[in-house]
Image 1 (cartoon, rainbow, N blue to C red):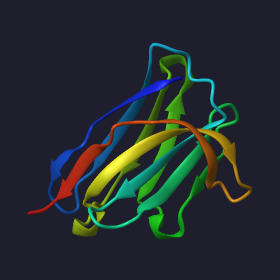
Image 2 (image 1 turned 90 degrees about the vertical axis):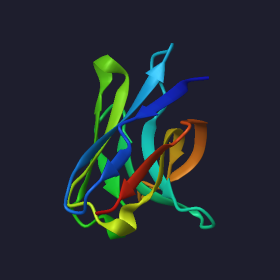
Image 3 (image 1 turned 180 degrees about the vertical axis):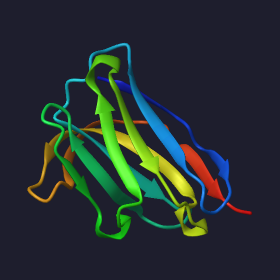
Image 4 (image 1 turned 60 degrees about the horizontal axis):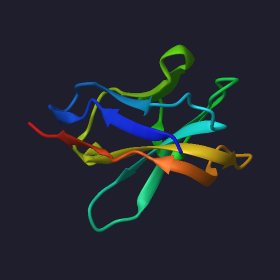
Length: 124
C-alpha cells in the first residue's frame, strides 16, 4: 500500500497562492490516478480534482473555476495542487488520495490510500 505524505498547507492571505504536495513514500506510485479533496469540519469531504497518473488527463470539480491546477511529477512520485487567488472559503483540510478506479467524469470510484491531510487557512 502506498503511503501518501502531504505538505504545503499553511496560513495565507486572501488573494495569495499555495502549492500543496502529495508524495508517495517508500513505493512507486502505481495507482491509476491521484485525486484531491477538501473538507471543512462538520461537512462532507468534497472532490476537487483528479489527474490520471500515466496520461496526465485532468478533471476538476465545477466550483474550481480555473483557480486550481492539479499536476504530477512521475519521476518524483509526487502530485501537486496549485491554488491561486485564495479565498476565505477555501479554508479546509486538503487530502490527496491514490485512486484505483475513476468514473468517466473524473471522480474517484475506489481508493488505494489516503494522505493524512494538510490544513489550509485563508485569512487576513
